[in-house]
Length: 263
Image (cartoon, rainbow, N blue to C red; front, side, top):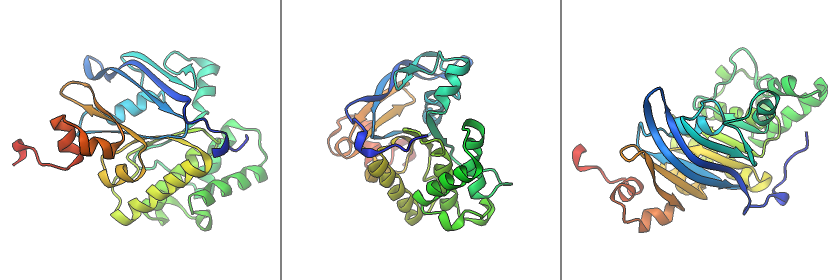
């Protein structure tokens, strides 16, 4: 395991490439024929209205769900077609933080971070302890290494989940609604942590979010999904989209304008 560094990240190179991807389950299609890419070092946000398939798309990107059609290439390798040892190796090249954090309640924070190291590395216990403490320190939780998840706040649980996602020094982190359920101050603190990790370590983030304050604060680029057309209806800098988009749905979303149906 060698720590990643912001100094050797090429932000014009493609970390993730999505080709003609269709997302759904059984006979239900949520999104179809999606094409987009994520560059190394970007904070890339997937957004859209409720029920449009944001989280489902994210789970297709990191291989938890199998797409209905299309391909996802992570660092040039096709995760939708990888099998066996090849797929296992790919799955250790990125980290995932689920919406509720999904920490193991029977383990303290240090043990939660060490878990994947025990599974996928040949490090000694002392080496794992040292690296896990480094990960907790990166998210400001080193003093809480012996705490159980139930003993810390929701925001701290989210940061601990990010530390665990970084256990194997991934270049890419997938985060599902990291700010969900957090108060504005805690959410801003988490945004700051994400930006620090991006700036200092060059980590590429792919994040599902609908929190506009967070999106404006951290996102380099966004895509907006639309459940009516089952497609991407906007892509780019969220502030530019807010100020210049002529698409009524995009303008309404980014400017928090209530729809006529809800009035």
